[in-house]
Image (cartoon, rainbow, N blue to C red; front, side, top):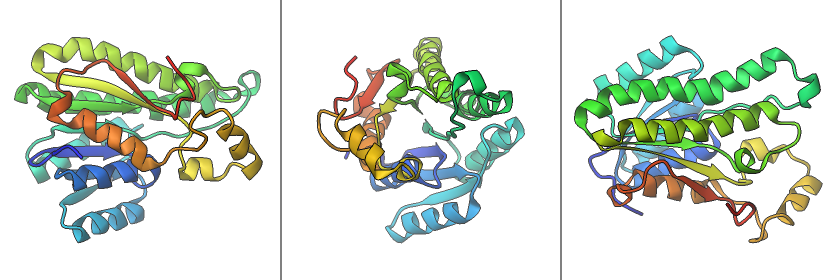
Length: 248
């Protein structure tokens, strides 16, 4: 993959799934990686794996929906590594249900974590990236933000909002040489999709031209590219990683 030697990255929602694979891929590309999530045990295991492979990693317990935890987490990362070059806003939750029956607390929880959380993390990252006049922010959206999905109005709205946030911030801070892009995964093999019945998974595959679900590594490869120097002239873009399921 592209070299990220000398770079410092922070990945939210890094304890499992796409976030975990992304942290591993960034470390393999040479970056020092701060991994953030709510599950300290899983973070410790991830740090141990990265260190065991010769990388450098640092765990930060953080709920991105909590502004004070976000501030404290970023402060800890800067104290540890001295800078931040790459932010991957990956943390997300689901609270599925039909829109007409959706509880307000389920709507608020998803928007707060998936969209407001990314905003809070971006604010903290920009404070240091704008001073350095360099940086990469990569937001993890979703194919459903582009095509919709029944029973996930809150999740779809949060991911659609994340795409809008990506484009707005990209314009705001382009003059400081900070790029902001999004990756929109399709149906990926993660703990979130593992719970789906086999029948549902097989039906989903029929909607994917490549005939298979993606892996976290597929998404991580796209993230490493957008984090690299080679992607320096790309900003405000949504990179689809969906096996052809949705063609913009």
